[in-house]
Length: 383
Ligand SMILES: NC(=O)c1ccc[n+]([C@@H]2O[C@H](COP(=O)([O-])OP(=O)(O)OC[C@H]3O[C@@H](n4cnc5c(N)ncnc54)[C@H](O)[C@@H]3O)[C@@H](O)[C@H]2O)c1
Ligand SMILES: [Fe+2]
Image 1 (cartoon, rainbow, N blue to C red):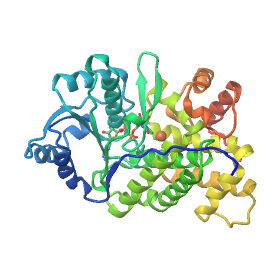
Image 2: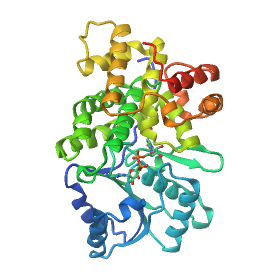
Image 3: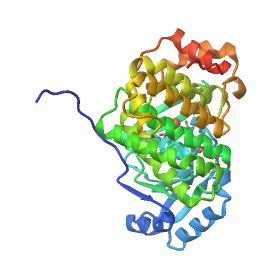
């Protein structure tokens, strides 16, 4: 057999997923024998009734919790440093992150810093990630995105050491997400699956994950958006974003993320919204290289017959994304997000440093990226 390419796959060793699964976490932690955790979360979750109940349940089993609730959306290096300090001061042995991608990424940053600090050699925090959005899939990936607040730049960390030991996806924690959050995080998950499917690093396993995720998002996202209490739709999205995570954590992402990260770093905007606005423009840009693959995605969700050529089917796929964005009330242009047009060149230059730029199927120059930002700024999509 002629050698082609080999792959390594990463996933958490254990995942609790499905309605009500959070209740099973206590026994898992008792089995691990860890008695002191740092809870890394944000203000919304530290005051939530579900969190108070969880803390009481754990404390009744002699598992002590120190709360660190200063994580912001797009978490920063200084938040990671503060978490490290609290972890060490309180002699914790594990970290529980609770919330969306931001608390998980911050917790991963804390874990990695502790692992790398010479002064505390030998410490290896046990990491549990309880996810509440659907989503980034950060509860199960080997990726963390931390903002360097002084440089206004989002650092992408990819390291197998930060894969959570236990991932928890309980849709009951997701049912109160407000509509804009459901829309933004759902479009983030969809972007993960689409970018992984066409990525240079894709392979048969990640492709099947990506298609599975896209089918579930097609089925459940809009229902979860209009009827957030529908636990079946929330559960469908919890699985969808997890499976999308399996695809992108192993195949890599593309230009949508490489460009969205710069908007998040410079303007502190919601990650999923940036992705959603950019997605149709990037697909149109990539079509010269990957029309057939986008066409396959259109066929997978029955937007067209299997006989339609990729060149046409891929356009149907773009129209589908545009319509979905409209139904989810996502803005059409970067202008509506408050981006400054004169920043497009600076943003384009920063994209070239983002790891997601390299796995995009089509090559791009600084000038092309600037033009792409400008098109998305104006909201002018030529398809
Ligand atoms: N590590 C990865 O693999 C990965 C992948 C994609 C994105 N990201 C990163 O994740 C971050 C975005 O995470 P996110 O989109 O999940 O949001 P988030 O964690 O930033 O949370 C956004 C807001 O939603 C609130 N919230 C969270 N869950 C809620 C719920 N169930 N009900 C009501 N409100 C809730 C939070 O309190 C917060 O105010 C970005 O920094 C992005 O770059 C990471
Ligand atoms: Fe993302």
